Image (cartoon, helix red, strand yellow):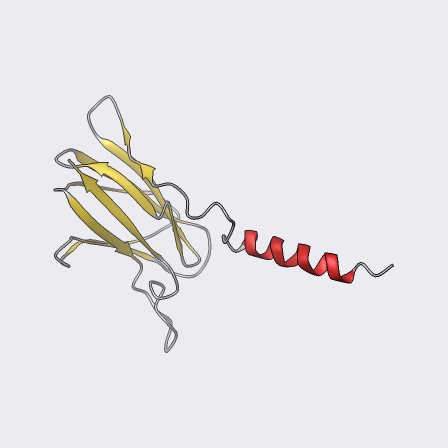
Amino acid sequence: MNLSRPLRGCTFGIALLAAGKGLAGPAAPFQARMDADGVQRVSLVGGSHFFRPEHILARAGLPLEFTLSREPGIVPHRFVLEAPDGSTLADVELDETPQRLRLTLTAGDYVFYCPNRLLFFKSHREQGMSGRLEIRE
């Protein structure tokens, strides 16, 4: 009995799921948590060419506090947050020790990314280390 054909298909399906290409599509946006003190909070972790979460929703006009960190490793990463007009609002070197960044933002779509690059390779942003912050009324 030749099992190579069914196993090949199964292996391909597992590889797609492992690569985040499952049929369910992209994960739902992460809603920033509102604490009793009126501050919205979100923990953001950077790692090998990713941010988790990569899509965040928060409310305009209320303080938004990020707890920023990176996974263990030797590759340096940064968190750059750009306003809808392209201006830089934050540029933080990520560390394994969490750091806090607090902002109060107006409604709009913001992008965040890691601009680091090694020699002539693509930047971390070009390799997928970016995300979106939606600030809504």
